[in-house]
Length: 110
Image (cartoon, rainbow, N blue to C red; front, side, top):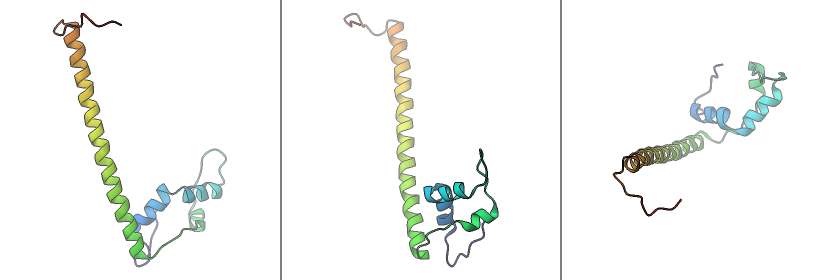
């Protein structure tokens, strides 16, 4: 479904975030859905959704803040994933060295 916005009043990215990420919006869509097992969104349902729209400059500030915070989170996730990969490689290497006898574990009790 395509939503046409008045870009003088609404920031496209702000509306996207509201629709895709907002629990309030998703709850409204579920309540308006006539489906019993799978939620269905009709154009008329979408027209009934009530959104809080701050002034355009505030919407842009909110989007910029979310983009920066998300980028920081994504960077942290990538760093942690890299560390996990390195630890997995270290674990495999350590196991290999113990199994092949390159590392002496004679004094270790299990």
